[in-house]
Image (spheres, rainbow, N blue to C red):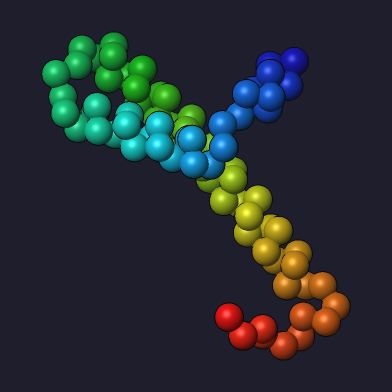
Length: 77
């Protein structure tokens, strides 16, 4: 059931990316205890995984859209 809770509370790509940016800034600034640094590192790893999950989903959706019939020619952008 932990997966259900995590899915319901999964941040958007933008939220995860922004929080990950803040985590990196705090780690780079230093001045943290080892325990604080490890906690931030672990949070950063989770946020990076969330971002990767969103990006993989976007790639899959794009690939599916490009595989639809009638998409043989590239549309001008």
